[in-house]
Picture (cartoon, rainbow, N blue to C red):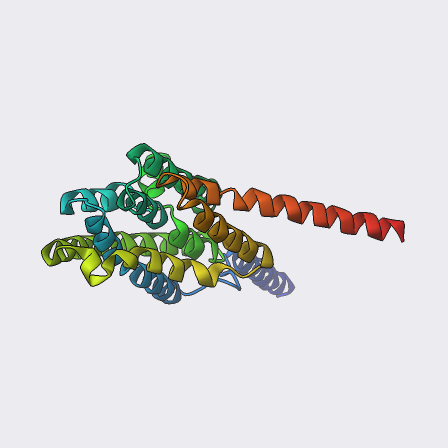
Length: 263
């Protein structure tokens, strides 16, 4: 009897130990993980809101003299709004195509830095990275980086990129075709649609004082050099506002440090 009791107790202990081990080895959901529905909702909100501005790009491209096919090709192959607006804006002002392309290229280089950060976060295989790279822009990067884990980041990146890419290209087609049907876009005042949309997208992002200073100095440089330099060049001159403000911020910080040490 005693021997059987010991066997039962031993069996219960083994079973209890196995239950504890299974409990410990079971993966626990991350405390800060977001439900997929919330990620999809936010991603679609960004994709739809920004994708509609492709209409303004189509109108601006038509006003710059581009055909419907050329405007749609830019949206399909370039797919970075700021660079596209910069390119057609410089062309509309009569700028040299190479100068316009240079300005658009420099604006687009920021996407390469986004890619460096997203590469480790998303963890796509080598075969998928060239396709994902085409969707690395401001909006997809912002949504992906705001997620707490890789699964949510991939979902947010994919939904934002897909919604924005499809809608941006459809509205580009609608804007370019509509503007072509209207004729001279300057008669309707539609030539200002592109810059207006660009400023509307950029203004809410200028929160720190340094960013506002860069924007203000860039605007001053642009207004001063616009009547003096060939079209497209003032945009490149305005880009000097960023290093200038950073230099002044660095000097002010260094001066403050020296004063604190002197005390």
